[in-house]
Image 1 (tube, rainbow, N blue to C red):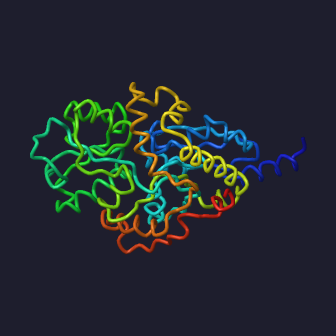
Image 2 (cartoon, rainbow, N blue to C red):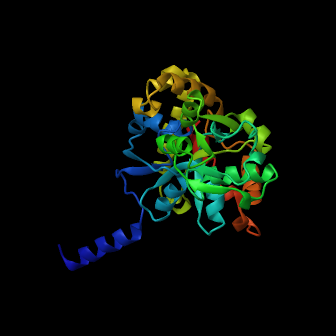
Image 3 (tube, rainbow, N blue to C red):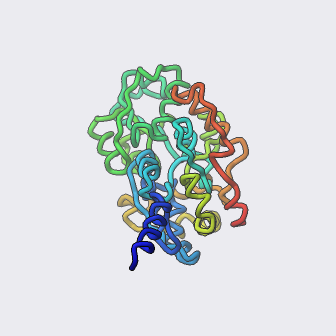
Length: 332
């Protein structure tokens, strides 16, 4: 191979840049806890063969917090993150261009629990003054939402402490050991604690109705977001990803919780299939059948974020650039 050819190949490699997947190469998605019910569509699309049917080779990785997924996306290690939409707004304020290509849910599917070891007088977020609250990670959506609920209850953010404890067994261990007195988690972790009598509910965001009561409106949450520049260069691949995920959302709507659970790895059940199925049945209402962003959803998410995070104060957020309907519309 002559020097001229080598130079051309090197130039092409450099032009591709970090995180650029060539045709036929695997696409890696980082999920902020793949076993969580809120992120069910991505695992379901894999298990049902929807990615393969679209000619895609998709690798799914799991991180215990969505904010860490965003970090690896920004350095180009993965091509997409299955996490919460609010991160596209939060990171735009920091100069990063991310876009949500399909919206999974219209509510967080999260719940603020208080340890059963706390006295019965602790009945609301207002009673958590001086407590340590568990979140998946610092800068995570669970921290954004927990801080909002604390402030809405009349407390100052400085009157509680936030501790990153992850989810699943790690969250359960932190609560049962007394490392945290309360915390925000998702299903099936929440139901495992509640069924065991180790916690009780303080603030519920597990259904659209609960979310409207607690946050004043719907809060579009779980989604697939990617770097805006990467999406612009890879529209055919993104379309096929969205096609597969819309199929998964439709499957959720047209099948029972038991039928859906049968498609999921047994280790997702947390040792209790019946509890998982019940929690999944309750959670089905949060999923959006066609993957479209709810009208007014982005503005409400921004309103919540601005009330909880000073880093967004004075920053102009271009909401239309944080999500697109292009791919879900074509998938329909």
